Image (tube, rainbow, N blue to C red; front, side, top):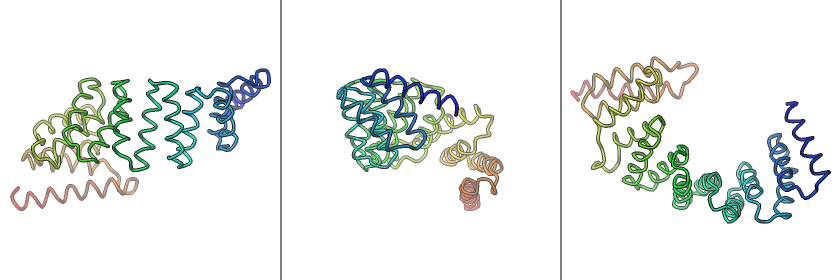
Length: 255
């Protein structure tokens, strides 16, 4: 905490010596926002963008504060002003996308995430968000392509690989399904975790079942259930239990 206090004192002193120091207003605002002093933080951001209307960081941080307060309409306006001042502001595209999704404008959200990924192809969180918004809009082929491109660019990004495995397992457009490829993908990721990640194991179990390997699927689901402690993670345990029950009854029906 003391370092943060020092930072606040430093920015206050900077502003005392130079009342036109726009970055100091924003930096002090960020520190105060972190402490929950949102009113003073907002006043400082407003001061910064009044002094310098084309100050991207000022608008960006104001947008973040508005979004954190649940005011996504105003947050979007701030992000747009940040982007008008700086066209390649990747984080502003990404955060605008999140606020657009909160406002249920999935089309605009997808466009924002797309711009963020276009500007920074290794931005995995933006790519995952783009894939999710495409999925929600039923743009399954675009979602598939987005995830496949991501896997080429950032092969170590396991969340993207698992999303792709899920899509290849149970895509509503059955022509895009490829259970064997999903098994290979989820299996590779699961192995990287030493088969100790229950979420990945359940995706693997789903893929194995679709690829007609019920024995393997039941084994993966059992392992997932064994890893989640029902007392610590009741939701996860219930999910693993339901998954296993479904597979067992499928086995009893003969596949």
